[in-house]
Image (cartoon, rainbow, N blue to C red):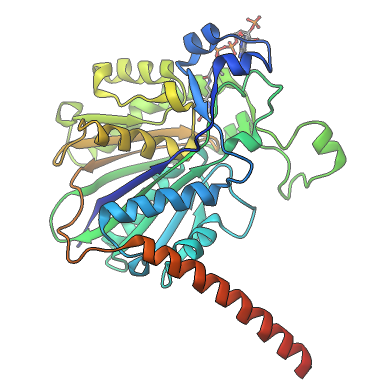
Length: 367
Ligand code: UT7
């Protein structure tokens, strides 16, 4: 049975930064309150011209570059997002077209902030089954479009950004070693965007009532998160007969510094084994685990052979954890020039659109 290794990684955050002081100009809050209660100092916010696919494409290209893998070699793209481009088509398909992943299947996976752990596990399982060799997993968010900038309970928390991992099959042991995924829909209404779906399609009333924005019972989500995080880590380790002593790094979903502190306490682990960057990005939902992992790699904190645990929780309610033995890129065959693939993808997409128009025009004439 092949192993699923993480061989490439890439992140992208939009340039504009929104500080706590900036938010204090919009709602009644303060830098001190936000830092004390959440650990967040600032977050990145996408420009009007940037979308989940824009951020996702940048992260994906960077991840493919590290893996030295051509987009045409991808078998599958799984995109996970709590702020997708549309209800459909899938954001994954838009990214597939823009990077020129000509033979890849592409779909979105929705598990709120746990999405990246779920998607990585699904990608890894596709590889473990032997049916796929190269899978791209992307978490991308433009949550700022779903935030009610008049609601101080939520607008202080969220940020925009994207992260991507390439998973590749190898006979060498390592990579994704175990995973647990959980859900409890009885808590569905504690974190949601209530309108815009089939339950409450957009009407003047839903818009007037702000139901297209994120609604959250912060205290409830906080209690749930502190309850499940430590337990999920332990469960994922027990699956492969490991304990926290075998782990070099925990990369938790970055929602609130106090939630991470409480998980560390529950696991009886020092906080310096936890990768934390919530201070500079806020809660980027599905992108938070790859963003934190990639920063830890850039600082040479995570190294090859390290055992790393990803753990997340979020709307649904959902939660999950995964143990990974870190490896890095597979030995390079030949250098892949991703710029050329990107140009080719744009040209290909343009030609296919024109062709579709001509085909449509001709078939109308035939009728
Ligand atoms: O990916 C998962 C996404 N969500 C989460 O992880 C959220 C989890 N929850 C949390 O992180 C925390 O519950 C919050 C940061 C959202 C809130 O912190 P808290 O310590 O639970 O505050 P609270 O809701 O208990 O509010 C305490 C007080 C209230 O005032 P009163 O009723 O005591 O007078 C709030 O009205 O703080 C007030 N408050 C604020 N004050 C200044 C709430 N938000 C703010 C604010 N600035 N932004």
